[in-house]
Length: 99
Image 1 (cartoon, rainbow, N blue to C red):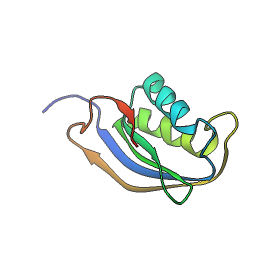
Image 2: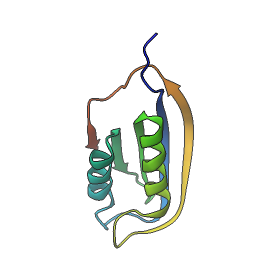
Image 3: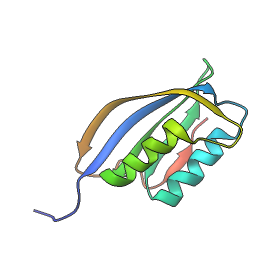
Image 4: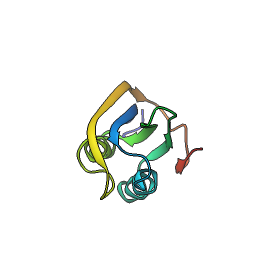
């Protein structure tokens, strides 16, 4: 049994004015600052989607950022989180922008 804190994984989709406002770049920055891994990308329907993984409290901080902060010129209407679960190991080694 390792004494490591539980790891959490969650998928997200951000709605609002989130494309063309450097949202992905700021998300990548914030994720690296907080210390979570995963990815972010623009969708064809004007939203930003992705996945975040890491220690639970860090993932929670990132979820809060994705719901309330975003990039300076973005406007977040709502953020949907899904597929929230505890995982035994990380699927990614860093946080990246996908195209």
